[in-house]
Length: 533
Image: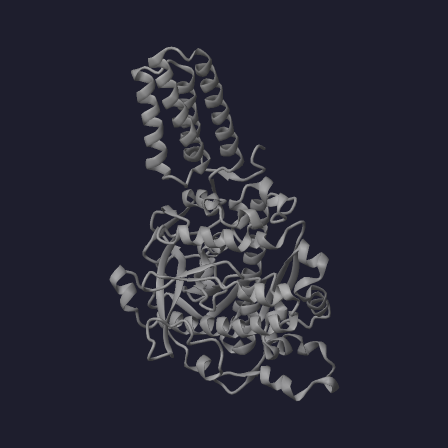
């Protein structure tokens, strides 16, 4: 297939084809009134539907094409440049061939459709008020980014996107927030593109055409609807908090979150404010940008231990954000927030606050595991997609790996990793069911403590003894395929830069979604049977 399994947007592809065909007509016919009209319509259509940069594969070549067409009209009027007319026509056609090639190489694409969901999906972008008092007291990075309350550092707002089940009719919504799209595209190019391309921010503007099938500010699905998920959860929806990876944000994990919401989960996607996110839109519409200094000042200088310590400090910040938004999130089951009230949306009595899953990729997977290690009695399950385990704080890593040790080798400091629940019973992360998925790339290289985690699972030391914990590998996949990035990047370019493996990234994303859903279904089913007995 021409695009290797990616999904070009049909309407955009048709419009691009029509525009190039119209310009070809202008280049090969006499410059009369009809020619002028077709040229004007083609130009206006491109600018009005795509601006100057969103369909740069056409708008950029259009500039020299218009210059040549202007010269052609002068030659037509003067009538003495017969050789020039031929040259102008040839150059015009060459430009259109280049434009057509670029349009094929850089198509505007869409995400895979959600085919097996029981619900449509509602979406709300919001800023949740949270209390970071505990985090500030522990001396983490908290309090450094709270522009809303500079005199009250314990009060702040976390930027989040909420995806949830609804019966309202879905519409096409922009994948990227229109107010943040330019900033996000520019920062992504700076962070991830090879050196010469870092400043070509407009190359990602095709992402502005991508849409998701969802309904903004939709009414949550009624708890009276009869589905297996709701019945198992007391006719309420389970919760999930989603933590993004380094130099990512909540948006680029939309596909995985949409799958969860369509299956009956309420998913809160956090934009972290430790400056590990590519760009976070604050409450005042300003943007907190990704901080590259750790990479440039430490990692590239070979100071790996210091670099890891800094990342662990950031993990503490991220954990506090996840646990703080979870607290606010659960409170919405009792009392609605003013912001949601203003939207006419309420989750009161619709959330199963006893069924909470933490999900994340890479830095986010590390965050999810660390949060579960800190407060295991609050968490039902953890889904860690390729976790950067070495960035977990010391006590969290001790908690994760303590079951490897023989009884006589346990150290007193392991007790720090235990949590006391409301009934006075101690719990650890191994009382929580865990799914840890790796890409083939990381598994082969042994990154993310793959061999160690796999060994724990094979010895039945991962998660509760009678639980559903699992460790898996997405074969022939690369690290970034857990995000949406590979579904939006031209396949030839993604493979040339090592972003994507040999598989169709849409198929990889679907496998990740299915394996995640199967794990959560199994965990919920076992929990339900245990409660019934």
